[in-house]
Length: 411
Image 1 (cartoon, helix red, strand yellow):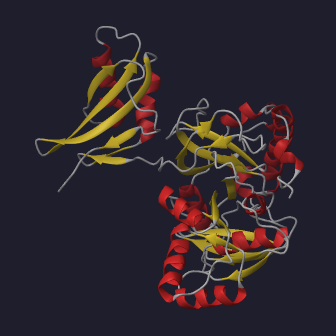
Image 2 (cartoon, rainbow, N blue to C red):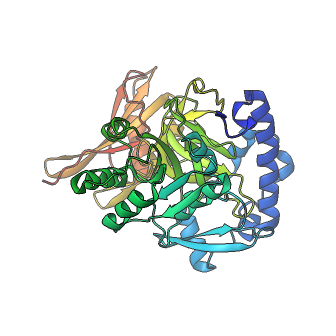
Image 3 (cartoon, one colour):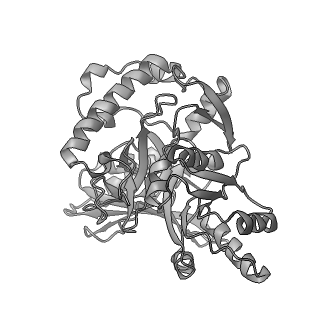
């Protein structure tokens, strides 16, 4: 059996970097030329000044809040789409509302690569347990199955008994959907004495894939791998049989940035996942997912050479309200930038004596006299609130991407 979806998965780092640089820069030119929104967003950007992938970090982030705002002003896509090639086939509506296009482009959401890694091939019959109602999840996976030549049973969500009956009669060899729903199907099948043993592989997503579920599937002879995708951009990363992190999709430029900023972090530091998918029909640039993850060192033992992320590690939006005032991660990062002595910081919010209190813990190698007071003054200036400051040794704070930790309890 062929191990890789295509030869790009085993390219050298230099080959991939050169190709990605060319493709991403061409993508930005395309977006500025054909997307009215990006013509405005990138209006002051001289494309000729962009020469490397590192230069992309100077471009602004695109956030979900901006999608909602722009689409509200100019529905359905807020001028972000660049529908110059393939015809529009579907419009999805995710909570927000946020509208997502799908065109006739083959494997529009790029999920075929993840499905292939999970063992699905031409001739497979895949029971699709993702929703087909308004949101794109069901279509995302069906689209990838069709690109592989696999047939799909559009199960969707709910109607568990009917889905089990269908599985028993049609005997699909694969499942895609949330891991919890596959667990429910297996339990209900056992209760009803139904045979669903035809399923021996699964691609799951949409929620945390807990180790006990992975083991439960393995005990039933099901190899269950996971992928990371969003309704806005499609596939971002996926597992292989090595089960050693999630491999970044070949048609995505992924960055890990400091939460609340667009500043890229070194590999190994937890931060917000920012992606530029090479989708010419909906060319989102530096789209901030709001998810936390980290780049893993090395490459997958399966032979795929692209970078890997650990997977979903929480949400990056850690905005809190303290004494009636919102405090954002970007404000904390502004405080840090004012003081070069700070290597890493974490704002902790607590309830002390029935009142909100916040303390900024700062890792500092050199702690000059008066530094804590100076930092406290910057907090008052930028956050409009008083906060304590604790100077700690480098390496004291966790590397978990959390900028603001809310420890308050109202029980």
